[in-house]
Image (cartoon, rainbow, N blue to C red; front, side, top):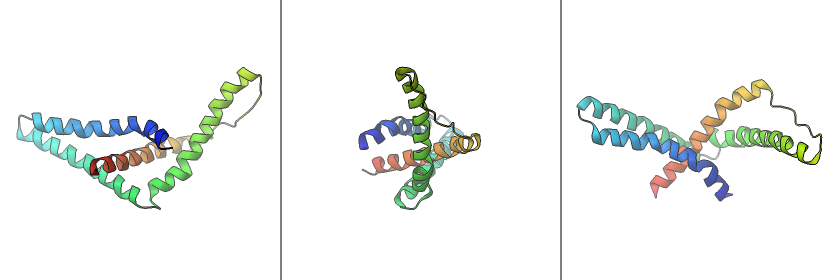
Length: 131
């Protein structure tokens, strides 16, 4: 399970840390005070998001944890079933059917899942930085 989580969240963590590393690099290479202040503001914003994600991860009943259980997992299983049926039907001559995700649920998932994943990535990053 840990291997799968590392596989799925590894790229996201790198994408999440890239802006922070970029902001620190911009601060180091800044030539003017306004550039340094802009980099400081960017760093503060990214660190605040990371701290919020850490606080969410520490709470057993946090929105991130509940969202993962109630939204991400069922939606992921639903989409996996749709893709699996599309692969198995031609290979084995089956006529399995999975009802497509309703448009309103799909629209909500397109907003909620990235927010939950970013929260998870922030919590993972915070744990790694704590070590």
